[in-house]
Length: 250
Image (cartoon, rainbow, N blue to C red):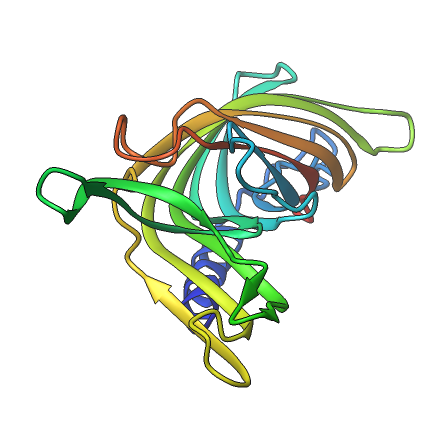
């Protein structure tokens, strides 16, 4: 969480710099245009994880957030424009399982063999006849993102923007961890909380398609990942579909 807060602060400084340098485009009457160019984007959503398999259960609510600073390039005097930016985004999976090294037992040599693959291992229901309960079990990924959009933006008689945008984003993995808080799953007494970093076999680069539809500063937002979270043949073929709202105050 501390690392994420630091990244959000850095992103906020970056966004503030973009906003401070925004165009002061004027109309023929000399007044500033009221048309919003969506220079700041805050996406709040839940991740719906695909291809998770039947061996685990994923929560219907796995919240994530993106914060971007965008630069808008109008296509002449048309209502269309192209925008690109920089920022940070997170994807979270709340479930009853954790990423772990896949282990197989070789009956010939009677030894344990690590396959080099990553699997999701279900948290046991009971350990030493004691029921395991937990408040948090979360698999989190944070990316440095480059969002891109092709935008359509018009205004109604009240001067409010009506907008539609399609695009995508490219993300580079900068942090990954498991966060757990609950009963000790190793059989110890009492509750524990821990974070485990550097999950094996994660893809460093992800990419996907985005779409949003909005009125003024409020938008409906969706993201469909076209890449997998783990490397091919090295882990589960999971990927997120994100649905939520996008707030564009400027």
